[in-house]
Length: 100
Image (cartoon, rainbow, N blue to C red; front, side, top):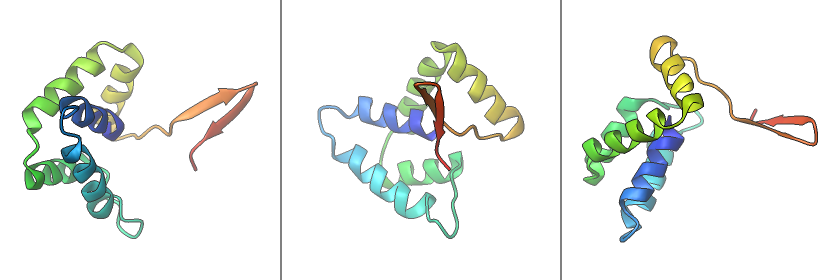
């Protein structure tokens, strides 16, 4: 879900891209620490609040993107119901690649 959140923060700040980059850097420093990763909504919310990013607008954007894409909606439901994170993958010439 974080990739959707970041996409929405970008879309909502196209005129002044600084809030997007501030979020990306702060989220990375705060929530994506390799020693203590906190990839969850509370950490993202705390970063948005600290940076003055309108969480309500971001959440509305995320809801629209999720509802307009069945696969994302399935992944979102899986995450909300069971806290299961799916690892992104892509198939190129029949070979499956994914982040490890």
